[in-house]
Image (cartoon, rainbow, N blue to C red; front, side, top):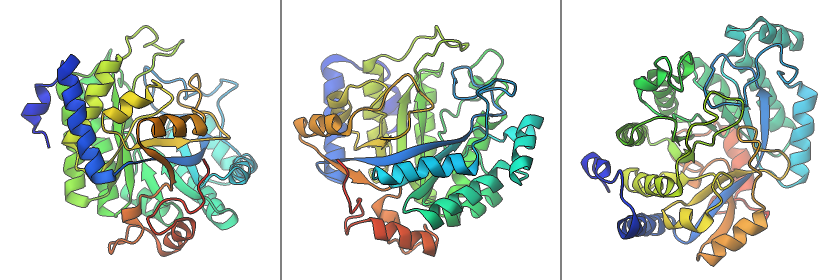
Length: 375
């Protein structure tokens, strides 16, 4: 395990030294997770693409007045869910812009037409429908949440998530990536992670690299996540995601992190974080599967046979068979997991609502991975 001082000294490690660092992280991964690498077969449900935040790199969010701005109807949601169920998906990932009804009359009007006052209330009901009408398990990614929001959503979800991205307050200053984004204020995101821990919610978070942060800010963000996990034990997964420049955004010409930067960040993350935390890197953003495995990851995240990556629509999901072949070529067996990691399924602590625990156990085999493997 690395100290902060050790990690800071690795900001430019490369060549043979980077390979040695990767070897250390891969050894720790193998000791903890074995020769299995996982993925979750999911459907991505963008409940709304309106958001009160304006991040400089985002193309998911659409402003009211745009013909693409929308709130999905219940019929649209369930059509996607049912199509996903037919294709063997087990995870329904609800992802949505943050609190658009607090900023936009159009969002309030759309919710009122559906019979709701808040996006959280609508999200809860749609998660209930997924649980009651299908075999899928909802995973909720709704951004910053109050304690009441978490209590409301826990009975109808298997897990929740929110990217921390970075804890630097410098990045919310004018001219920086998170300026005018009230939900990207670091203390608000850290509070959500802590509230999830207090209510024993299996939680996925992560960092976004290459958005203007320093190496020290990157390290401190990983340490902040790890400190919360040491207090509450609820961080099931950390994602290290590389920034991808997109046309028609203020950061269209911003340089992307190179491969070495991604690999050293992954290796350092594996050695900084508690070994029980799963380490994930999105396979569609760099497509360097062997290099990622060599840097200590044990999970490829959610991959969908039915919906695109709405956050990075220009980057197609890999074929599961290709991912399986590449993993096996590196000595790892690809296995399908559920949205909830195994240690939270039968834990003595109340990580899952009783009804949700029953749903998850019905889908899992004794080791906690998906009983029906779709590879």
